[in-house]
Image 1 (cartoon, protein in one colour):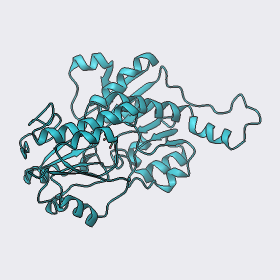
Image 2 (cartoon, protein in one colour):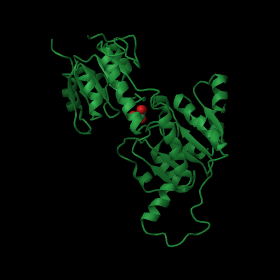
Image 3 (cartoon, rainbow, N blue to C red):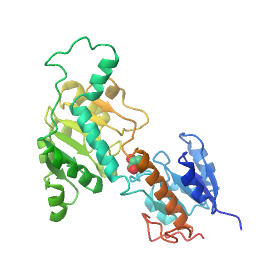
Length: 332
Ligand code: DGY
């Protein structure tokens, strides 16, 4: 019997990919690249399963070019690149990588918050530029994080992991979420629910952990930035498009807010030129989940889902993090 084909859109850990080989004809890309629609269609045309990243948009058009496709595993917890309704309608299962990255992304949110508030990137650029000939006592003044108010917009599992870290900093945590958390979780996270206006006005450091949805498009735009403290730090480790990048560039330039730490961008890998011009922003190339262990865990989970969807591995028949369980692609 011929093996089904799995297409892997980006190179990752060969030993993890090897787990697929006994059961699949593996077609793995050997370099990181962006596929034009026709290239994506050509690859999906022969695929029974696909492991994709955020750059691959699997929508009705892509699905129409994929007559054999039974399962799509997304390498990421956010799956706004997948049209789940269209996939479900076509009987194609889909999975993401929740939970395995919560703590790593929470670490990184704190890294960006601390770096932006304490001007780490800006100071390092200055030092590397050979400008350190002496230090002014009043130079490089930043904003404290300890003992301050940290706001979290979007309080899922990553938001909760961010909140728990605040205890050691003796910081107060406010949050806003579509729905309020159970009081036991609020207590465990020492987090207080407030409305969005209070969150914007009260946070010394505001961290965005929302999923990207049409409703969350530009959840932080010019009006929201104007409602923040002029000394505030904004951190986005969620998705590009949640922040209006042009409005953020203006807010950083005119002192509407103090600083930003941004890992995700509208139209990434392109970055708004107005953000690149600013010194009071720490920029990183969408790496919040990129620790050695967590990227391996994400890859393992994606592979486990594909194996399970085709009746193999420890979860045979039950992809562990399937997003549309009604479909249960039994292509074995
Ligand atoms: C995620 O897991 O959603 C990361 O942002 C990678 O896309």
